[in-house]
Length: 517
Image 1 (cartoon, rainbow, N blue to C red):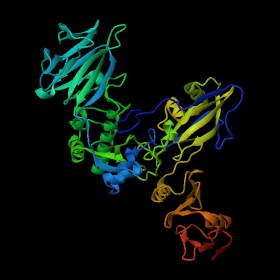
Image 2: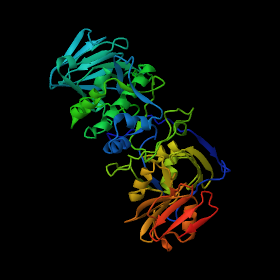
Image 3: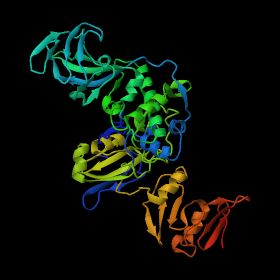
Image 4: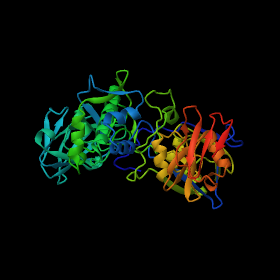
């Protein structure tokens, strides 16, 4: 599931898991997906991640359209503005590794010093350039083992951590257990969970700007406006998280260096392909953050919204947050985005095993409740021996889906020319309620508030209200009128008019009368 530029981060446990072994739960289902004749379910989805805040692929697409970083961020974070951070943290504590029994330190481009108690403490040992040493906990002390396997020292303890110092020496340290190489900050090796032999955890202490240099959330080759939007969102997220405390249980850090928070790759990002472009985006946005009412926001973001972001209460519950409202994402649908649309086919047996609800073989899904983006908030799973109501996040995580913006056994993908029109309308037609169907040499797709028709030549056009009703009554694209050549237009007298290939429909707004010419 991991790709370098997605934002999956912060998915909490299931919102809801209610089992009923004898009766179905909830109100009558607004949507049903029955098991197919071949015993398979098909999940038609779009997007990748939790759906909150900024879509990274959306920012990419909007940057290609000429949007500025400020416009991108204000679009995804409703009612916010950009500001200079008033009291940014001087350093950030980044959790690199937790619960390791042994840690390898490889000195690159220079020596790495091991110091006791603090980065300026007593020098215990120096790892020569090119060598890899190990540190293991023995009882409640650190055992330092050199490249030949010999013990260099047994030092420190739970109250005296060990520090790897490299930046002042012009060196880098590669830590295989963290999967990356680091050139900035200092690495603290801390002992914890010492009840039955200690574990080691690694915490990087680093200046915020240098932390951002190594943040590997999007490719450095992306449009500069998207990179700057990402840098500002990431800085905002980090500052807000650090304000809650920098010694979180489990990592003794402010932020994990993984998808739990933000993916930090250190030198591998900064010194990687086009890394200088990313560093420039970070430098050009120095201390810039997203604020609401003068406070930095929780700047959540994800890889791909699938075309629409979600309200926070529909993802993790809780009180609605003004700046985390679902919005149309017209930049997400790009050929470069591998998660714009996707499908997953699973047998009923696979679904039953992976969900593990204890209700026998899953037969159908009912009672699907969706958020503003179309993401599943809650769904009832019906099996041979009972039923279970689960959250969309549980469905997503247990089945290994990219997103819970998914339709089951119903293709609701919005693609091609119809998608381009839909995005141009800022998603005004609403959620899709039919598949994209071929008709009379063109295409048609129904949405909750309108229908979009497409034919090469006339192009894609949106019809709604009484004009749509009369058009369909006249046979739609198969009738004498052919395809629409305009959208619905409101005339000076308030009437609605649409031109077609072979005629015109004009209707009163209330639909009390329509004329076809």
